[in-house]
Length: 204
Image (tube, rainbow, N blue to C red; front, side, top):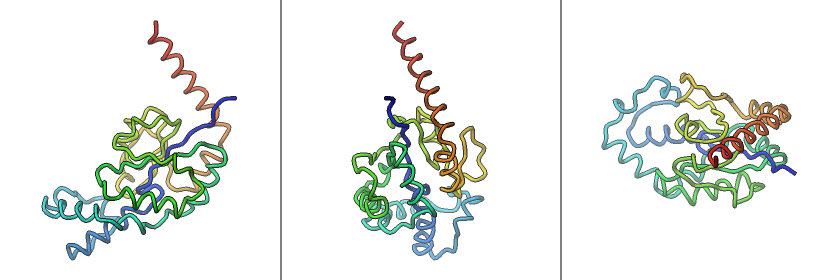
C-alpha cells in the first residue's frame, strides 16, 4: 500500500497571525501607527533603523510573544480534516527566533492537539523537509523545498509574482486538498515516479 500523501505546514502567517502581532508590538515599542496593510508598500530597511530592528528582534526572543498569537480563520477545522487523509507536519523556521521554541510548542498543543508532536519540525532551511507538499508564505522557503510548494497569501507577498500555486485562505486550502483529493493523488504519484526515475539515473 503506498504511503499517505504528506503535507508540511508553516506556522507563522499560515496557521498563526504573526504579522498582526508583530506590527502591534512594534507600534507599542516605537510609538508608531503602522498597520499590516502598510507592509504592501513599506520599505522596511528605510523605515526602521538598525537599532530599532535589533531591539525588536531581542523582544521577539523573549518568552511569551508567540504564545498568544491568533489562529487564522478556519485553520483548526481544515487542518483537522487534512489530518484524516494526509500525514500532516508542522515545519516552522524558528532558528532566527530561538526564544520562540517553547511557546510555539505550547501554542500548537493548545490549538492543534490532534497533531502528532513527533511531526513538529523546527528548522531553518526547509529543503530538509521531505514531504510531498509545503504550505508556506515565504517564497524563498518554497524555492528551497524539494516537493510541491504552495504559497499561502500573506500581507507581504500579495503583490509578488510567483510560479507556485497560491492559496489565499484555509477555505481555499480545503478545496485544493480535500475537494480535489483525487487530483492531488495523481499529482503526487506522478512526482514520486519522476523522483524514482531520477534516482535510478544517478545510479547509472
